[in-house]
Each structure stands twice: as C-alpha cells, then as structure tokens.
Length: 593
Image (tube, rainbow, N blue to C red):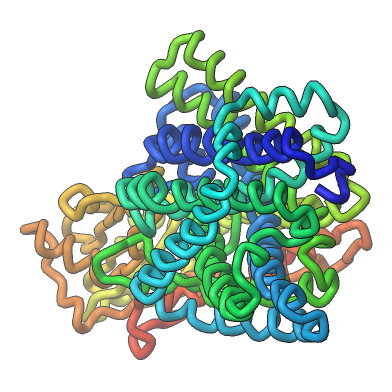
C-alpha cells in the first residue's frame, strides 16, 4: 500500500482487501480448482500435459496443433521463470519477519533464507509423497494459526466483512484508478503458485487439491486477509508487515519460524510442478533426455529430477543474494505469473471448445469474468518491466531458446540419421545372400525410427560380419497420454520371413510410464506365443551417433554449439532404459554437423 500512495483509511482498506479476496476467488477457486483441474490428461496436469492432450484431440488440424504447441512452449518457459522466483520471494518474505520482532536481526535475513532454501532442495530426493506426509500436519496447523490470528481483529472491527462484496473493489478502482491499477501488480502476489497447483495434479490428484483448497486453505486465507485489513484500520503503522503485527510481540519470533516452515512447504508445490513440466517437455521432444527417478511405487506422477533440482536451487540462491529482500524481488515476480495465467487460459478455452464443446456464451463468460482480470493483472505488472520485471522474461527467453534449439536440432539430426541407417527390409533381405555368420544368442536393438535399420546392427554386420540367431528391434513410442495399460502397450511384427529370426517390437509408453525396456520385453514374451527368447541372456546394443562440430566452424553457428552441448549432456540411455550394464554394448558412427 505504501508504494501505491493509497492512505490506509477504512474505505481504501475495504477496497484493497476486496480486490485480494476476489482475485483469489476468481483465479484460484473458479478458474483452477473448479475448472482447469478438470482438464486433466488422464490424471496429469500442467500446461504441457494440456498441450499433449490437445495435440491428440486436434488430429489433422496441423496449424492449430502447431499454435497450441507454441503457446505451450511459451507458457512452460514462463513457468520456469515463476519456479525460480517463487521459492526465493516466499522464503525471504517469511524470514523478513525477524526485522519486525527486532530490527537488529535484519542482517540475518539473507543467510537464514539461504540456509532454509538449502534444506528445502536437499529433501527433494526423498520424493513428494514422503515430503507431503511430513509437511501435511504442519500446513494444517499453519492455516489454523492464520485463521486464529485473523478472527480477533475481525471481531474487533466486524465492518471489515463488507470487503467480501466486490462493490468495494469496484469503488476503489473508480475513486483511485491509477493507484488501483498499479496496486494490481502487488495483488498478483496473493495468487502465487496457482499455476503450480495445476502442474501438481499428477502428484496429489484433483480431488485432494479441491478438498484441501475449499475446506482449509481458502477459508483460512480469507480470515487472515480480513484480519490484516481490520488491523491496518485500527493501527495504520502495521501496514508495513501486517501478518506479523497480528501476533503479540512475544509470539512474533515463533510466528517467523512457523511462517518460514510454511513457505518451505508452499514452495514444494512449485518445485514438484517443475519436475512434472520438465518430464512432459522431455517426452514432447522439447528438451534432451534427463535422469528421472521415481519416488513412489504407487503414484506414477511422483518423480525427482536431480539436474533440475540443483539447477533450480542455484538459480533461486542467486536471486536471494542478488535482490536480498522480497520487496525488491516482488517487482520481478508478476510478469511470469500473469503471463502463464493468460497462456493457460487460452489453451483451456481451446480445450473447452474442442473437447467439452463449450458454446460461445460460455467461452465469452470465461473470457470476460476470468480472462479480463488476468489481462489487467498482466498489464499492471508490465509497468514493472524495468524495475525487475525483465528477470522472468529473461529466464523464459533462455528456456524458449533451449527448447526451440533442441527441437530444430533433433529434427535435423533425425533426417540425417535416417539416411545413414537406410531402410530395414532391404537390409534384412541382403543378409540372406551376404557372408554373415549367425551366432547363438539374443540381440536387442533399441531403435527410435520406424522402418530404418539400427546403426548398431549395421555396424555389427558390416564391420564384424556376424548377426545373432534372434534379433529384436525395440521401438519406444511416446503416446500423448500419461499412461498406457500393459495389455495395450506391446505390438510384435516379424521382419522379413520367420526364418530370418528378426522381430520388431513396438512399445507404447505414456509420459508418466517408465521406459524400462527389459520389463516391457518381458511383457511381450508373456503376451506372445511366438516370441521365444531368453531375456536373462540377451545382449543390448545401443546405436550411437556421435555428433561433432563442423570441420569449418562459423561464428554464427552458436545455436549449433548449444545443441551439441545439450546432446552431449543427455542422460545415459543405459540408465533411462534400465538396461543391464554388463550386457550392454555401444556401437555407432560419427557425424559432423
């Protein structure tokens, strides 16, 4: 309120609290909890899960599917910007309560925040489920504490309840249009993590999210915001940090500790959401392979990505050290959040019109009632572009650059690789007349391209003039769904004649399914009466096309260098495919781009 020059007189306070409460109601409750969480991709949420669902539903409408993909890339990139800023601003704002209890404790804010963040990211390998079980009771107690802090102030000033009416927000906008517009840039902080709530759908489930929000989180937030408004009317000097002034002086330090713990838990939603979005981006071909660890045997959506976790930690820590206060960081925050909100609304409307068959009046009602609010919030945050708002845009720009570079580079390499591999059927036919010795055993060749020959098989035949009695070419197909049931996952086809001993196994996996080739081949053996192979003795041959810089490099080819760096640092396919290291052999060729 201070930086927007609106005096804390009752009418203004009623208007501000009304703006806060209705922003939460419209964006979090109405949009996300009641509507968007129903647009799940077989239980999975997040902007890229929605993109995958739309791409599957749109079928041959390629132009619209391409536009949806572009919007998804932009939304995911902005989500990464939000994911970097949210833990930093949340923890800083909580620890800053130390200066309310005692100004002498101010110098401890940054080091304490850094230590808290280190603990938060250090517990991520234990998995969302275990973390949630440990944090759940604490959050219940935190929301109960917030409600308890707000109720006495509401009782002391019951007229604050008029803020429940949107009339006061509208009146504030009419009386102070410029200040109210700028104030929207701060109001957006109250919907922190709303988009992460959708991304976390696969971790917690829609029913649990709706139940927790409607019965616990939202009532507690409304009470504490109303209580803060009542306190500011009675004690205007409390406007600097009203939450901590709600507590008696003797309880302010314990409240700081409790708030810090609560912000750690709240930041968990953004971190786990980042894991989900990253995995979906990998499956959609927007990012290179990364090591994904499952942290639950029952919940497929509960995952941990070590590289993402520690990269995010370093970025968050850098922001804390660079900005040092939540007030400074708040200027950088709004653009990432509001940009993501608008992009998800656009994609949701495409989904609602194509899948749910919404009519024009429903789409118009959503656009006016929700979209207009989000556009106003975005416009208010544009005013902070040069005061820190550039930061999330910079982060998003880097992510877009990485995604588009990887997508373009992968497409180019795929075309060249298919030429090197050559068609499969003519190659199999040539084996009958060539001087190639058949040796006992089972050779499994993971291979991404349909209709071409694995490079490892080409090298085995041309360089060593041998082939195994049983050759299994395995192709993993990434379906635009979270999960493919085992009985729908496997397709087996003979290549050439049965006497050739070469079969092609297609394994369809969703973007939450494990890419465990030995396990899926065991399913294939169980489901087929014709596939008689001993997987315990099988050898796995990985085809590798080692990419090298061009022999005559050009300075302008910096994106080529970026692609080569990304490709070089991909996760090991032996680990991704769960292949036994002692029975895995790597063969391939080099390619100078």
